[in-house]
Image 1 (cartoon, rainbow over the protein chains, first blue to last red):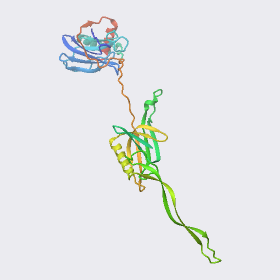
Image 2: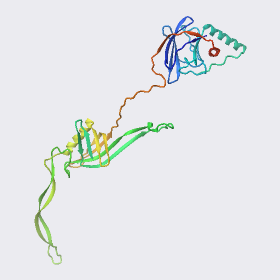
Image 3: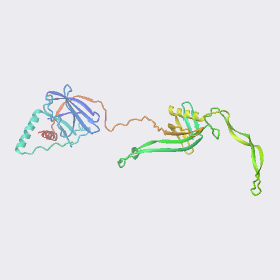
Length: 130
Length: 227
């Protein structure tokens, strides 16, 4: 589980960065929409071809959920927040983070969830939508 | 009524012989929808233009010397003696009982009268008609002066000139006032939030291991929602 350091803030409301996720390079764009008061993300491969774009960054959201694309990262990118809200400076003041979970971690979480469902154990609380 | 207009090089005037009627109209377009409580109501009213309509008369036989559009023709009041010819005056009435007819004295003589005479023939009706048409076609900016009101930036919108009398014309005119606005250059305030900024190329960003338990729990919680 790794945090993607994202220098997106009020002074840099449109940020493009390259990250290496499990040996493959990807482009992550973040843009602040002042009218909606929200960040919007775009994930692209190393050649800057869209994998997913225009997804609103909200607390507990998984940026790659539902994407069927061989080019996508093996794991999953989720949004974590300190208090459920994401402001324009949340990525630089620690209020929100892009967290990458590797494929192994996703698989382990999936297996754990399946076991918990089978045994009737309590699942972790659902994500808080910001 | 006096109409002053700027023809580009000078301000000329038309002094009409008589004003039969005049009418000022001004109308605002007021919203018929509810206005939010506390809002500036003036923002929901569209101020309309002032309209002016009038019926004026121009005569080729005026009873006073016109002050405009005479183009050198002068007029002055002159007294003259007029021969009134023979006038019969009854001296004695007829008497039916006596069978006598009425008796008359016949007088002749002259009287002195004052008349307005012009130095030469003119057609002010024709000249003013052409001038009004020129004002309309050229869209000259006019100033309307009446006994009660004066308005500038008036545009002549319509001319109607039915000839109702032998040597005069009643012009029906309508004007619309042009409203103007001044432009001013002001500095744009800084937006509360940055907008239209260029994209920042952050380059290659490293990943940092998540060590704090709340973030780990939050990430796993988000992931759990997918299964």
